Length: 254
Ligand code: SAH
Image 1 (tube, rainbow, N blue to C red):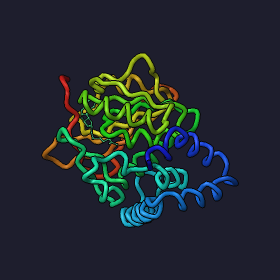
Image 2: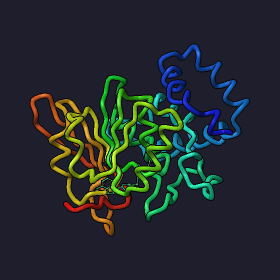
Image 3: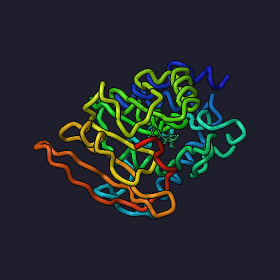
């Protein structure tokens, strides 16, 4: 029933809210009356802000920006985790989603989304759909989100889930994201949610001038570095290390 209520209007509602702050108070009141998870999400967002304050400045970002926190206070993370984990859905930690994979910690989702600096005209590529939660968070902030997942069952489940919840500007495809998604390139932003031991050259190629990529780089048994890759308007590419992180590995045949 909760799923039905959230149904097709959710993504549209979040988009409208971001565009129209006047209406957001009205929506919030009705949402909190109907949805027992709203207060749990508010606590999760507070935890994200506390983590951000403890970590300090990452790149040029002193904290997580309000539009990203707003979206995270509305996306029903509990519907992206297996039923037997729902009670932990709003704790600030990663959770198993099957097939040896995990949904990332909410703070990391917030941080990576914020670092991507998406705007509503942007076309974004995500590599590592997993549950679809990161794609759902990007959905109201971007024009279109393309997301690739290598595990067929996860790709299918995420596609169905995102469709059912009304995230109509997200398209999921099963495949090896190392090679990107050439048909829809170039992308204003690319976000990789599995760790590669090098930055995949096809993804750099598929970034548009002025675009940026957020990617964890490093082996599974070593400290990985969250990196920002920027392609400048003259075509030059620069990279910088942002933060030590730990992600599941980017698999596939490369
Ligand atoms: N963003 C996800 C969590 C990602 S976990 C969420 O919000 O739930 C990392 C995911 O990357 C896993 O589901 C894993 O199967 C996927 N993955 C690993 N290697 C991949 C590759 N080469 N191409 C596409 N997906 C890959």
